[in-house]
Image 1 (cartoon, rainbow, N blue to C red):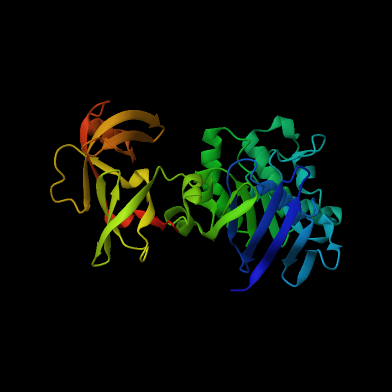
Image 2: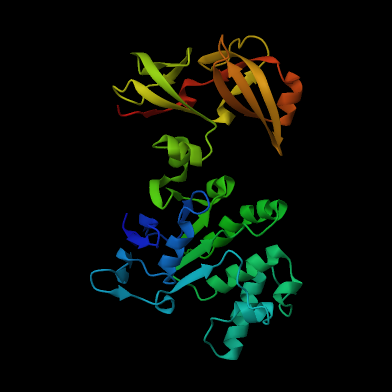
Length: 366
C-alpha cells in the first residue's frame, strides 16, 4: 500500500537531545496512527514538526507528492500551506469567541455559506444550543468537541491530535474515547494521534509507533505491537506485567519448555534456535483457580500464593509467587466477581494457569 505520509527526520535540541521520526501513514481514506510512549519521549515534537510548527534539522517529510520538509533542498512549508488540522492538548480555543465563531474561524466563505457549514458541524458534534456560549461557559468534553470541529471543518488532508483526551476527567475520557473513533471515521481523513494512555491507544489505533527517549522502538498494527512486542523495552512500555529472562531447555513438536528461576513453562516455540529468551506474560492471560486445574485447556498449571491484591476499577490486579520456592512472580488481572468467588486474600493458595499460546518469547542475542 502506498503512503500518504512518508516521514524520516531528526530534530536536535541543545544538550544533545535528538528526536527521530521514521514511519509512514497508510494512504487510505481513514486510519489512525498513534505515537505512543511515556511523557518526554518526543511524541509532541514529531506532531509539531508534521504541522510545520517546528523545523527539523535533517531528513524529509512528504505528503502524497508534496514535499513539506526536505533538508537537501531547504524546503520547509509553513503550517498554512500543509493543509493539516491540528487539535492541541489544551484545545487552544479563542476565549473571546463563541462556539460558532471558534468552529468557523478557518472558513474563508461568504457569511451565509459559512453559517450553514457551522450549523452542520454544531449538529454533527452534538453542540446545538451552545453556539453562542464562550469556551469558559461549556464543559471540558464540549470544549474538546469544539476543538475537533474547528480542526475538521476545513476538511484537511491530515488531522493531528495531541493528547486529545488528557485534559478530561476519567469518566468523561472513557465516554469520549468510545465516541471519538466513530466520529473521526465519518470524515474519512487520516489521523496521527499522540497519547501515553494504553487504553486510548488500543481503542483508537490502527497503526502504532512505540517511542522512548526520542527513538522509535517498534511500528506496526496495534494488535501486533501489544501482543508481540519486539523487545523488553517495548513490552514494558505497552504494559505487559511479567517480563522475565528464561532459558529454553528443550524443543518438541513446535513447543518449547522454558525454565525461569527454577519454574518450567511450556510455550509455542517462536524463537528458532535461541536459548536465552525474554518471557512476556500479560496479566489478563493468567487465570486463577482453587485446587487443581482439572480439564481446563491451559498447558501451564503453577501452584501459587497471593502476595498482594490491588483493586483497579473494573479489574483487580493480583500479585502471585509461583513455584516450590516462590521464585517466580506473576501478575494476574481478574474481575471483582472472580476474586470474590475465589475468596482471595494475602497468602491464599491458588492455581495459576497460562495457555502456551499466551506466552510471548523474545530472543536474546548473546
